[in-house]
Amino acid sequence: MTLPNTPAILVTGGAGFIGSHTVVSLIEAGFRPVIVDDFSNSSPNVIQRLEQITGKAIAYYTLDCLDLQGLKTVFAQETISGVIHFAAHKAVGESVQQPLKYYRNNLDSLLNVLSLMQEYQVQDLVFSSSATVYGQPDNLPVDEQAPLKPAESPYGFTKQVGEQILRDACKVSALRSVLLRYFNPIGAHPSGLIGELPLGPPNNLVPYIIQTAAGLRERLTVFGNDYATPDGTCIRDYIHVVDLAQAHVQALKHLQKQTEASYCEAFNIGTGKGNSVLEVIQTFIQETNQGLPYTIGPRRAGDVTAVYASVQKAEKQLDWHAERSLAQALVDAWRWQCSLK
Ligand code: UD1
Image 1 (spheres, rainbow, N blue to C red):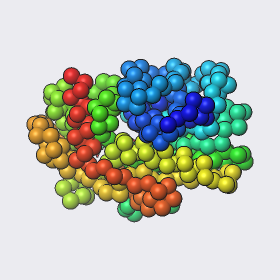
Image 2 (cartoon, rainbow, N blue to C red; image 1 turned 90 degrees about the vertical axis):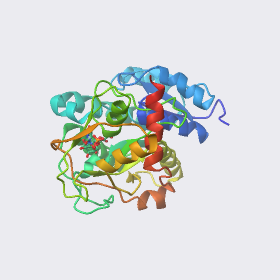
Image 3 (tube, rainbow, N blue to C red; image 1 turned 45 degrees about the vertical axis):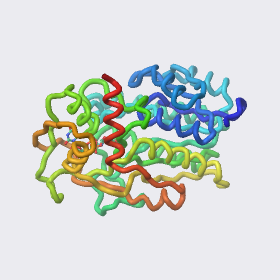
Image 4 (cartoon, rainbow, N blue to C red; image 1 turned 120 degrees about the horizontal axis):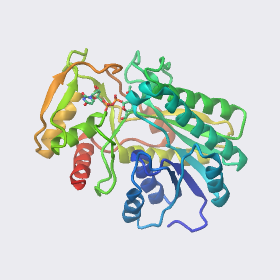
């Protein structure tokens, strides 16, 4: 049970795909999330859906994190004990076309959050980073010690710079931070009430699969089958969004236990297992009995051949591991897609 005067966890981007699932996990773990979202890439309906899933009223502010004064009112009105910062643009291709939009939004919003955390003496921050910081790693599974490769896109660079900003800030202040490097988040809440809502044609594999199976797209294109992998298609580590959400709760608990100010650590959040594009397609067809027209097309620029996580650090230090299978994630994603009809 959450007491009304429980300090709040500020969740920026809390109506988005990963943010909304994290709000559910936070409430289930007894935290009181307060959402800040500008609904630029999410629907305000998500708030009601979250209330339906959790049976709790959810505080939210319609606000862009670039609005420093607006954000300050949230810090002034709520007693905030920690922040999970999701709010960011995330379309890799768009970031190549509009780099300044990405640098301004993703970096200024982080700086705004950090300056208010300092002003209001809030210590704990969980930051959304990405496996994209590794590029194509030299060794697989990739662990957190692996060198970061030059970013393939402005989006990827904002994640690398965001991590560095936090490392630098933690060194000289009371700030404590966990950087979660997400692998490929997929799936949806099993209730079918929340999930991923891409605007326009999806860029990512699973949203494209479910929209194609639903008849909204003519066919899926597999981007290349001439990679140096067993079936020639790229390999990724697909993690169920509910498992990923729970990693945020564990990260927050971990931060709250730290005695050391200046704590700043990165953790891989994946399953530890790689699956090829064709394996994902076959699993989807098997589990849902849906037809899925697809063709093999050329490679997509910027795709790496294979990446999957070493998850030992998160298992040991965050006491977390992924529990849900690829099959479960695809069934949940499909249920979500069907609920949109
Ligand atoms: C991308 C981003 C990553 C981000 C993630 C969100 C890069 C380098 N990485 O990962 O930072 O966190 O999205 O989930 O851009 N594929 C097809 N056909 C499609 C779509 C995808 O074959 O229509 C293939 C891709 O070639 C890739 C795999 O499916 O091999 C996964 O692609 P995608 O879902 O876009 O994720 P990533 O590119 O791995």
